Image (tube, rainbow over all chains, first blue to last red; front, top):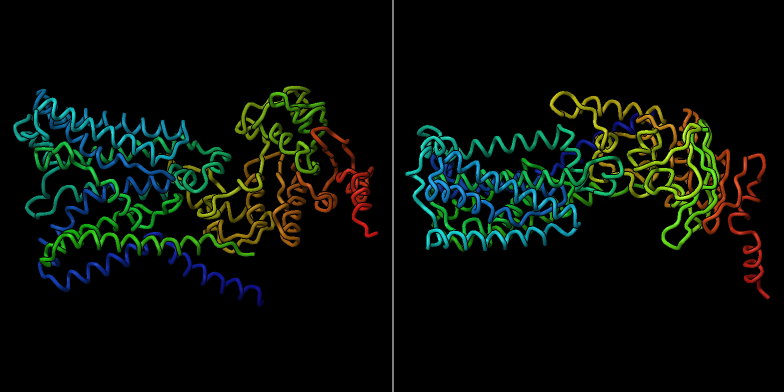
Length: 342
Length: 252
C-alpha cells in the first residue's frame, strides 16, 4: 500500500530530524573541533596531566552551568549565581576562622544562606512577575555590597583567609577540594559529573522535569493543566543557589581564602556555557549535558590558549565567537522544531 | 443533565458581563454557544470552567447546586476546558504534552515514560487521530492536530464535560472539519460537549442544542429541531441589523 510506504518515509525523516534537534548537538560538534585544534597544536594539552588541568575549570563552571541550564529551561535567569559562590565561600571561611565554627558546620551555615537567597529570588520573581533578569540583578548588586562591606568590617581587608587552621578542614577538603588519589584529577570533577547525571535524570525522567520544560515553554498553558508553576520556579532558583554553595565551598576549601569580590562576572560565563550547550534564552528548551559540554569547551579554551603560549586576551574573543555561533545554531534548530505544517 | 445553569450572571464592577443565562449540557450531546465578539461567551465558559465565579443565578452539576472554586476544582469534577491558544507547549513532544500536569509516576517520583508514550499513542489512535510519531514536538503539528490532541487528552483524563473555546476559529476549512469530526467522536464516547464558536456553519452540523448570546444576555436556547441553519445565522448576526447592512451595501 502506498500510504504505508509514505509513512515509513516520514519515519526516516523523523529520525534524522530528532537527531538534528537534540539541543546538545551544537556543543558536541564545537567540543570536538576545539579539542582537535588544541590537541594537534600542543602535546601537553592531550596528555593525561593536561586533561586533568583543563577539566578543572570545566568542573566548577560545569556545576553552575548545569544548574543555570535547568533554570533557563524553566524560563528564568539568575545573575546573582556568580556572586553567590563568593558569598557562600565568605560565610564558610569567616565563620570557621573568626567565630571558631567547625568547617562542616560553617558549610552548613553557608548552605542555609544560599537556600534563603535562592528562595527569596524565586519568591520575588513568581509573586511580582517581574523579569528575573532585573530581580536577580538586584540581588547580585546587594550581595556584592554585602560581601565587600561585611568582609571589610570584620577583617579590615578585602579577603578572609586561614581556613587551613580550622577544625574539620582536612576532612572537608578531601571531600570537596582535594584530588582523586595522586591522579591529578580534582574531586570537583566527580561532583560535576554527579550534578550532570542527576540534572539530566530529573529533566528527562521525572515529573519535575516535565514541569521545568513546561513552565519555560509556556507558563500559562502549563498552569492551565495543573502544573505548579510557581513552586517549580522557586525550586529552580533554590537549586541554582545550592549549586553556587557547592562551588563556593569547593573554591574556599581549595584556596583556603576567599576574596570579597569572588565570583563577580562569572554569572554571564554560566549563561554562555548553558547557551553553547543548547539552552534557548527564551526558555523551554535545552539540556544539562549540553551545558556540561559547554563548560568543557570553556575549560579547553581557557587552558589551551595558555598551553599554546598565546596572549590570554584572545580567550574573550574566542568565547564571544563561540557564543554567537551557538546562538545562531540554536535559533535555526528552534525554527526547525517549531515550524508548523499546514 | 450533567451541567446546567439557571439565570446565571456575572458582573465586573459596574459592568454586567453576563445576565440571566440558562443552558444545559447532556451526556452524549453537543451544546453550542454562539455569539459575536463581546456577547459574553468567554465569561460564560470561564464560569463553567471555574476561572470566574458567578454572582447571580445557580450552577448545577449532576442536579446539585455547586460553586466552582478553581479550574482544578472543575477538572476534579470532570469538567475539562480546551482553550484555543493555551492548549499545548510547542517545543515539547506530543506524549510529554499529553500527560503534562498529570504524569504517570513510578516510585520516587519517576515519570513512567514507557507508559506515557504507549498510552498517548493508543488514546490518539482511539480518537482516530493519525499522528506519525508521538515523539515529535507539538510545534510541528498543524493547528487542527493540536486541538485534537488536547481533546484526546481531556477524554483520557476522564472528562465528562468538554468545553472547547473557539477550537475552529483560527483554522482553515479542512482543518476545522477535522476538529468537528473529533468533537463528534468525543460526543459518541458519551461526553457532554460545550462548543463555543461564532461560526454557525461550524456549530449547526455537530450541535444538538444552541445557546445564542448577545450583549451579555441569552437570546434563547434551541434544540436542533426548533431552528434551521438559516434562522441560526440570522439570529446570530442580529437579523434586522444584517438586513439593514445589506440594504446599505447594495449599489444604487
